[in-house]
Amino acid sequence: MDAWTAANRANWDDRVPIHRASAFYDVEGWLAERPGPRPWELEVLGDVAGLDLVHLQCHFGLDTLAFADAGARVTGVDFSGAAIELARELATSAGLADRARFVEADALTAAEVLAPETFDVVYVSLGSLCWLPSVTAWAGEVAGLIRPGGRLYLHDAHPLAWAMAEGDLRVEQSYFEEPEPLAVDSDVTYTDGDDRLIHARHYEWNHSIGETVEAVIGAGLRIERLVEHDWTVWRRFPWLQATSDGRWVIQPGRPRVPLTFTLLATRGDG
Image 1 (spheres, one colour):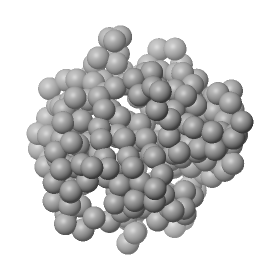
Image 2 (cartoon, rainbow, N blue to C red):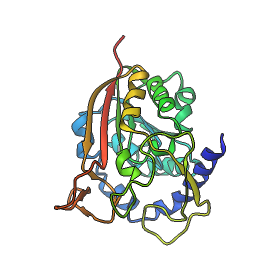
Image 3 (tube, rainbow, N blue to C red):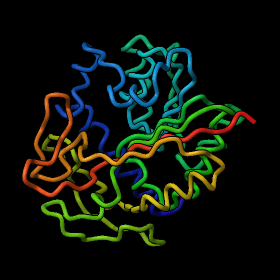
Image 4 (cartoon, helix red, strand yellow):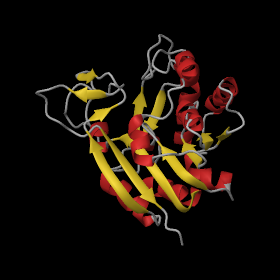
């Protein structure tokens, strides 16, 4: 494991207990309500009952378990041992251990670790690609996990939003993938809570829409859908406002910029 990945893993290990206790994740509320997948996910994926789904970079697995509640057989993959341990505990608490398993592995080695298994759906969600140095390597792993006729569902932060400063629309980092990551020193995470991260330094990469699209095509997948959204599910900028369905949107009167995007790709039957 390279030094950048090791630092990021230590950083995410630190985040697990903070996130577990946060109102942002509201784990106890989730266990009580069992909300299932988000409406915009099912709009793209449709009925997932009976499908084999792998969730890359699953953290402690609430989104993974939501798809198990919807009838899928799920596998969650994350490089944080602490996150995987908690995910397994939550699967047991939710009564889903018979259809949900969690594997400690890096997203860039997932196909090798899970081989020879393949899946109907590879699911990748918000806050994933920025932790990976190469979107091309990632797309290769994804392609190795999809069985013929299967699909990739990717919903992530838009690289333009990722390049902009948190307080305004000023671009402060590269829109494109760079060989050297952006080093970030921050002892706080994106959730509520007063606890601080011990391993504060972490590393991030941006990947342009074009680079992501080319990587997916180059891995042998066919892009069926690419949509840019002017909303996100967390408060990326302080001037976003909350909606009743759990999204954050741009306030009226401000310029509309893409905050997230959704990409759906398929692997041919042959």
